[in-house]
Length: 297
Ligand code: SF4
Image (cartoon, rainbow, N blue to C red; front, side, top):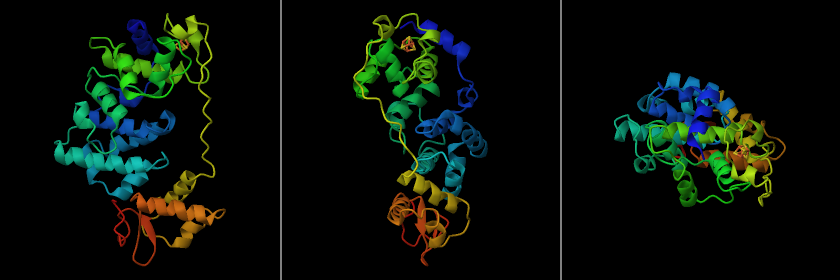
């Protein structure tokens, strides 16, 4: 793969995303990576801007209440990420002098930081030479380098080695990594790659005549009717109230399947996102009396 032509394309065409601005801190990049883990860019954008304006540092984030963190997370989904981000802020504030660590091994010890996120922070915040591998990158490498329609089952060791083999050995590494991700996100997409505008002059899959892959196309994950939707509705009620609410205020948001609603509420309690007061009402973590001691579990 010709890194120069990919980097040149990226410099010309990249989306103007605020967390890519050179003035953005490592902490703010970390926040964007948490939010982007399972939520599309367009929904993350306004939340991220509000978040870093309100809580620009790990210590500022750690000082916020768990309930305010959940409210600010809003409808980004998978709210356990918000809790992990809050915990991560506390660890960085207390154990790392309010500075995001710059090496992958230490980053991996932080709450909510997995292999991809650790490498993304080391690379994008600190310019380190480390392979950053997400789904988009795996797909681009499979097609452009290996001549395959799809990337097959993930393997951290193999995937990172394949990307490491492509990384330029100079200061353009972070830009190259961002460009690879960008290409997969906007040009070499899973369902309809836009080969006509692809900046890569050489692509093994294109040269081979686009042989079909073996992967069964993934079914689009539905949201309607899932426990995730029920959890979201229950959290909406609790986010809108600064005082504990009665059980019936929650029951009314999901009448079609009471067992599913109970299961969803239970899971919120187990996740420590919600707590129950002694008199049986419900509140966001930290806004009841934590009678069951579940909050923060
Ligand atoms: S030529 Fe097509 S398949 Fe190959 S990398 Fe570009 S967009 Fe992807």
